[in-house]
Length: 386
Image (cartoon, rainbow, N blue to C red; front, side):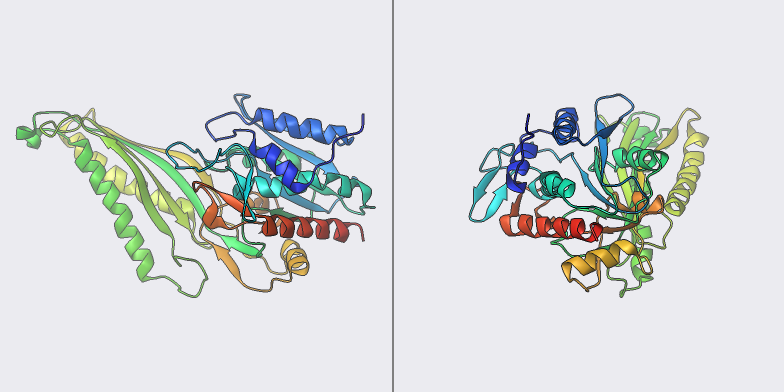
């Protein structure tokens, strides 16, 4: 049976139709991609999550030699709950030159381009391989890419460059911040608030730890190097959610909050974790002097390295050659790029779409950007066929 060929827009419609919100499985989409590739005679490898509910996929097209390019994208998307959409987020809808749907921009648009151009990859006389890499759970801490990158290295793949197709308006991004996400749980001692002197109020202790983030960020802002290109140009600390307490007249027994640090390249994210844990130990000692059963638990939920600028990087040179972009671009958000760079692969971020559309209701990618991304991937094919 002749395999079905698709345009990038047709492939995008198919990928958008799979609800791959990060709290759900991505296996239906991954199995579609596996079967689609198999239809063209391309063997792919799945790298499952520990619980088997999700999977990464990688495949190689071209000769089994060192070098070549990784084209990397994630398959998960952020939730649509609570957002006001004017069309079905799981049905690709075109209006006024824009393609609407969850993930169109971040980042099924790039995934669709890569998959749709597989027939052109196979038709080209590739001298070096193209490695397709699709991951899960990028949106919740780049969880899948950790396994994917290690699996590709263990399989003996040695690409010369990796291109992470996150939306950058086809600008060549050479650096981004790294980040560590944490959850802190404060276990206090509940008493009537009239005797707060003999209680340990978990919410108030948590408040001191939350304020620590403000103090550290103020220090970073004061000593920043404003010419590094980042916005903001310093490492940031932030608390996102807080839960705690039962009543205004009871010292809270429990309080937990989620928080993060995002570091510029050159700052070590685990140094911040060490400083934070030192503050935790100081407060914990004060708590236990009142009630020995109290304490503070810090859990690291994810930690992703920054993407650092490279000197004479192969990925940067290739991407600049194909896009004509010679500007200096860095971004504050994180990607899987630092993980690939950690495997020794020269890495940049370069993909279609505007990051301002990511995670938004009525998310879209313009037809023009989808076409620009396709032209870029065709350029990669041409480069590897020389």
